[in-house]
Image (tube, rainbow, N blue to C red; front, side, top):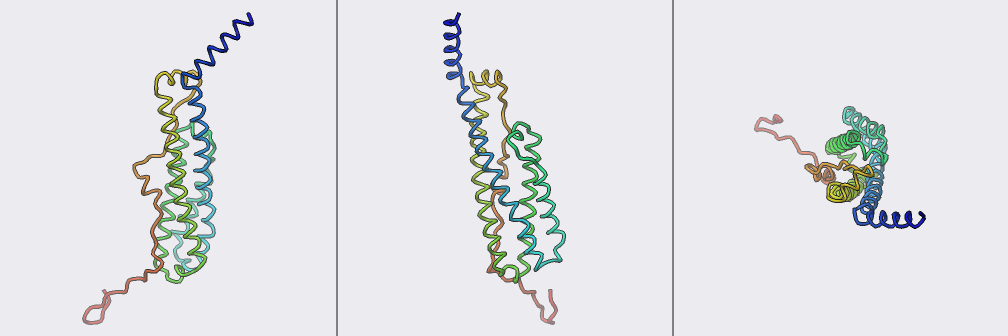
Length: 210
């Protein structure tokens, strides 16, 4: 009887190796690691927001709507628990992606507004924050791309034969991924020219501004 179980265990181990089980395990761990880096970089961006908002407020307090938009977007991002379990729920993943997209849009609008305030653009603290934000956006793009690749490899294994049978047996399902249609636009930080000067109003022959 003992010999039977030893032989059965050996056959099961051999089958698991050849049917994609180990690949599924490795791919799943890679996804978790890639996701952790995505979350870390998004958190790094969120941590910059309070100082950025306060700095802009010091020079452009009248831009209440834009400042409030950034603050609300950050609050929405913070309300989502970006745990690995989220990766098994397409609906929750979509909410996370939407919240981060709104955060990107709010920051873009904020930086566009700063173009109207030369003193703010020349402020050393603001310039440092903007540089940190740009660097973080680049790190987010890299982390997202790594996650996209990891999920693609995992999902291919889940769909392919005979590993798809193993996936069904052990409850592995395809994981949601970032949409790539506007990936470049999302990842690209707003370009702000700190050396630019506000455009001067045109004056007609009678001296009236246009």
